[in-house]
Image 1 (cartoon, helix red, strand yellow):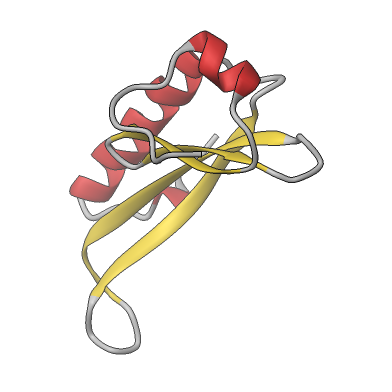
Image 2 (cartoon, one colour):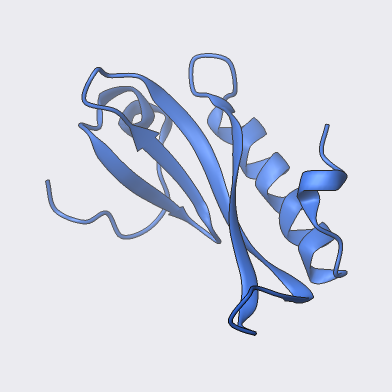
Length: 95
């Protein structure tokens, strides 16, 4: 399937095939070959560095798409990005 440009829709969340599908701003829907669907967000934590000295970029699971709606995933992704921008690692401040 061609790369998706732009926002996901409720219908796309239900029908997209296997792969990692971007919604924008670091939010992705991951669809496994089995059909399982889950949300992840990729954030870069300000001021934190990895072992090579590069900015710490981490993926965080937001929950399965059967439980977490598209709008809820977007809201949670925004919260995680705001924490990361403040230099707070969401791993230690998540729900």
